[in-house]
Length: 104
Image (cartoon, rainbow, N blue to C red; front, top):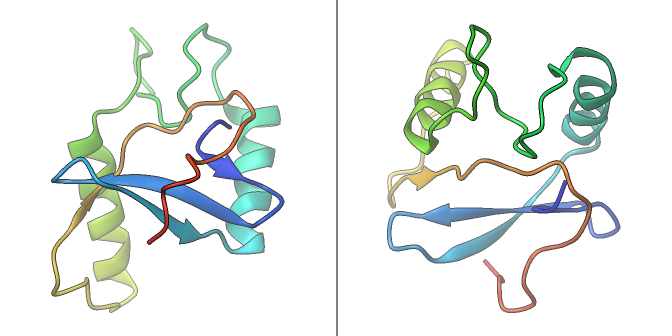
């Protein structure tokens, strides 16, 4: 997963201004991503993690991922950041790490 730095337990997101930010990746989330990639992710050639569940299977848009995250936060009664929102870019399945200048 190219946008995930497993060693530092962080992942990268791109904000509305196209600025890359590195955020912490909790152990449980990393574990869930690995299980999803190994067991539940459709077998398609795209390297993106977040995919539609109906044919044709394709990457979810950044807007769709952001809306899903916002609904999940709302269900848990977690206030979303008041300093602006982050549009999640699709995370790819290939291994690698964030750019070195992506410090949040």
